[in-house]
Image 1 (tube, rainbow, N blue to C red):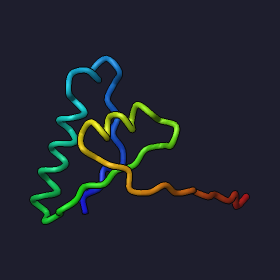
Image 2 (tube, rainbow, N blue to C red):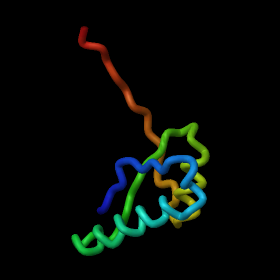
Image 3 (cartoon, helix red, strand yellow):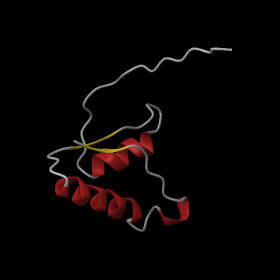
Image 4 (cartoon, rainbow, N blue to C red):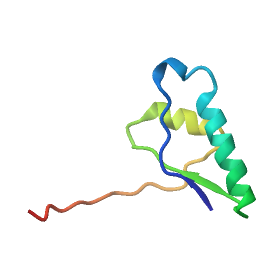
Amino acid sequence: MGYIEGIFVHPEYRQDAVGRALVAAAEVWAIEQGCTEMASDRQLGNQSSGSFHEALGFEEAERLVCYRKSLS
């Protein structure tokens, strides 16, 4: 499975299909590696990222809770 760990497009370029092009390039690379699916994530409150992903055909697969613990 291909995985997009993070994607950021400077706000002034967000309406220029830059993000769409980056994801398309990642998908081509993943296919060349033999992947049959692409995955990504977003922070729960980041609705614009959710809209971006959904516009590209991603669908929500699950929700999870992340934990941390200070060691100092």
